[in-house]
Amino acid sequence: MVTMSKKYEALGEFLEQQTSDEVSLSFDQITKIISRNLPKSADEYDVWWSNSPVEGRHNAVWLTRGWETTKLNRRARTVKFVRTGLSREIVKHKSVSRGRSVAAQPTTALSPAPVAASNHVLLSFQWMMLGNVVLDHAGGLQFPAVTANAGLYRIRIKLKEQSRFYVGESQSLRRRFSNYRAGHSGQKTSHRIHLLLKESLAAGAQIEVDIVTSDVTLEINGSVVAAEMSNKATRRMIEHAAIVATGGSDIELANL
Image 1 (tube, one colour):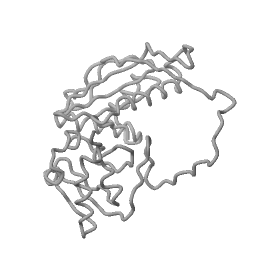
Image 2 (image 1 turned 30 degrees about the vertical axis):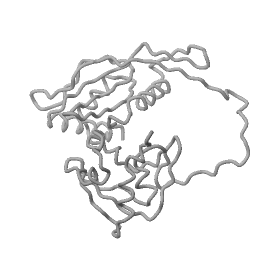
Image 3 (image 1 turned 90 degrees about the vertical axis):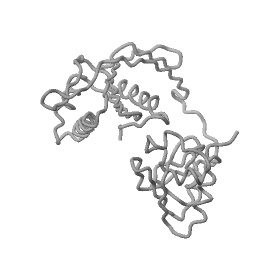
Image 4 (image 1 turned 180 degrees about the vertical axis):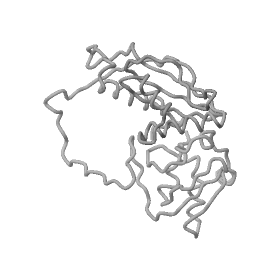
């Protein structure tokens, strides 16, 4: 089986031959270099071109050779490669944030902690479709009717063949959507989401909302635990699980 990075090895070899420290390429030029079509995700998602040094990703062909991507323009289908001069180590299983040091690994074997060392967690929940976000007659955001209770929400933005998701949690879903509708500049996240939704709708996107307010199953070490949505820690746990579950290679998350 050909590994992901081997498929794009010709691109790494091309970069090695460059005498300049910068090279701009169109997606079509890259296609010719690697003698195969780029995947659909390369056209749709910025993350495909990211410089996260994770094992098994195609970007190893440029990171290990001391190059990084910059100035990506998916609309124009162009990207610039810049020589850093430093070969990036590919991290197994998890990425390391740029600019942050990695703690030295202990030289002796570690022992399990004396308290709650083993934790086996099973979490199950289902998104329920609530409705669409649209523009009202005055050009403002109009959300579907929603409960005032606590819960999770997922906003799905679909424009042509591209999809973006925003996952969040709130003590009151109704109040959270009201904040997004108002989009006050003093509330940075609400203002950002407000602008994202309005700009997306103006571009012809379809925006749908899903929620989770009940029927969450939480099992820890074989024992069923009450998953109270009124508890913020519980909501945050489910929120992060939802982000991981939603954040596959074929979608773009707006949780930035």
